[in-house]
Image (tube, rainbow, N blue to C red; front, side, top):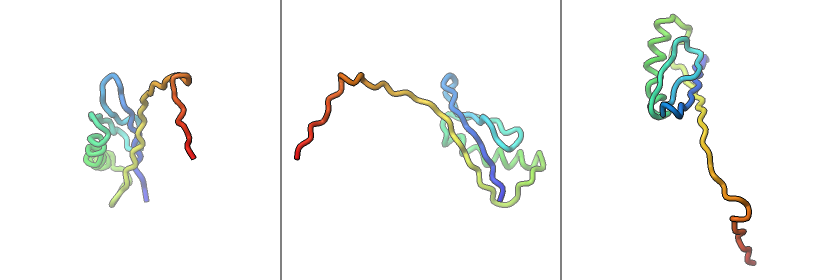
Length: 87
C-alpha cells in the first residue's frame, strides 16, 4: 500500500496553513484552518496524480503531519501557591 504524506505548517504572518512538503509533486495550497486544508487535499491530489501519471491506484491514505507553534506565559515560581495537602 502506498501512502501520500503531506507536511503542513502554519504561517503566523499570513494566518494560513500551507503544504510545506509532500511526496506528490506540485502539491501547493493553503487554507485558513487545518480542517479546511485537509478538505482540499483529496481533490488536488487526485488531479496531480492524473496529471503527473503517478503510481497511485485505488484507495490511498493521506497522512497529514502538521507543525504549529504557540507560547504560554508562566508566572515566576514565587507567584505560585502550592496546594495544601490534607489527610
